[in-house]
Image (cartoon, rainbow, N blue to C red; front, side):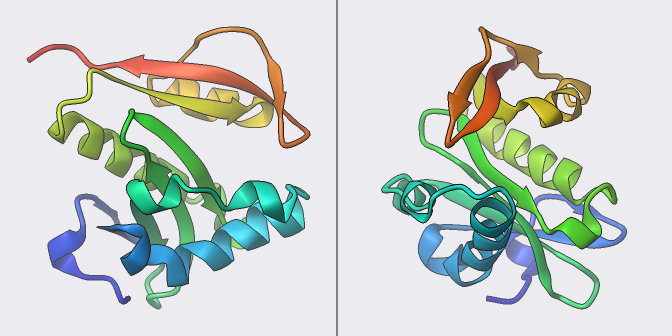
Length: 155
């Protein structure tokens, strides 16, 4: 799937964010998640793919050459997960754009809050986007995490 203006909620000068279901986005999201989680972070392959992909909304970030460089998903219960950005473009705003896109989607569908399991090294990133720690540290896929939450104000 190529970036489509009709399916994008948010954009940044160097990135485009495309939203779709797993059938539409898997060809671009899967290689990113494999590269970041399985190869780089050594998450077991059996833990990376789950039944939640089929029922989640997915967003893929594309660079100016229309290459997929990041992805994340929003589960039906308001959890954000599987957020990954390819190493060469980290720190350039793609992660923030992915997160802002998912936050807008959650608000538009009426979610009262969003939750996520942040790797400890990413906690400050999520804090800058309005998330607060909600509980103690825990290990998931062999990596230290903390639950974080952002409540939406009623309009």
